[in-house]
Length: 351
Image 1 (cartoon, rainbow, N blue to C red):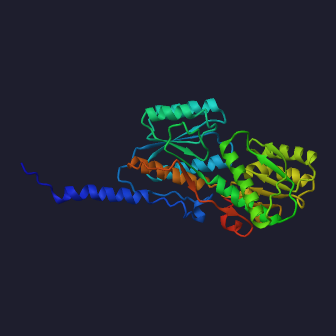
Image 2 (image 1 turned 90 degrees about the vertical axis):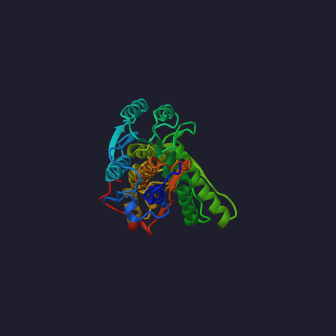
Image 3 (image 1 turned 60 degrees about the vertical axis):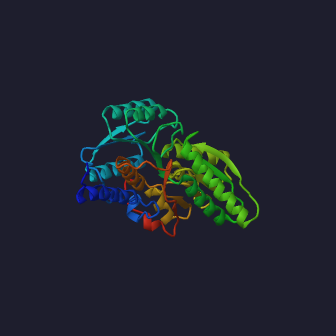
């Protein structure tokens, strides 16, 4: 028997397919605007979808809300989720691994359609990613990293290695053949993001020295951990200045690690003697220092606004059938110096 197929029935799937293709190309990681990076304005974006998103649930679990970065990231995910007619469910790990595991398990129980996870620990959250996968829930890792054995779609973060390299290169050019005595302020031991940023900083310094000088002169006097906090940076710097009074450079894995250290440097009367370089994050207080002083040389952009927007868009793409995600999806590297700091400074931003 001959089957007759109407023109409408032929065109409908083709139109849906075209819409999905358009959706997959909507996120351009290399075209971040000023409003995409740490802005106080609403930069949420409605994404075209071939399926009805109404009632779909996006779950996000943060390791903590005790820092402006985490608050800005949560806000970005929430506004982008709700902009697209979906339900936003959030959970706070309260800076405790066990509580974060329990919080993720609760989101799984609530039947979210996509889980966005910022893991406090790269190993402890592997089990819940597998539990989500078993429940049919795709997992997107946000900002931080997780062990490769986890079941996740992609990691969405800034390009920590490339950002660190840009900052390290800037520092090496600034000092030329002058001697650097460096103190390194880190977040906490073993953190994969911190390790990558540190690697980028050191690579940037040494590669530029080899290019411009023909040799490497890398003298790191000490490393101290700050627990990614203002108070931790203050205490670490106080101790460093006592043990190593000849320090003339501080490099750090994050603005937050060094903002407290600035107080210790000022109290010691050394703001004219020490140059600060950060491998991340573009926090507004750091950008303000870069604009107004000479002791904070540069930082690199790690935008919670852009990462949150990308995460929701990728989750929508997944719901529309996309599966060929890279294991890591980067926002573009960007160095902030005195020359461009005003472009990225927003005093009303959360971060």
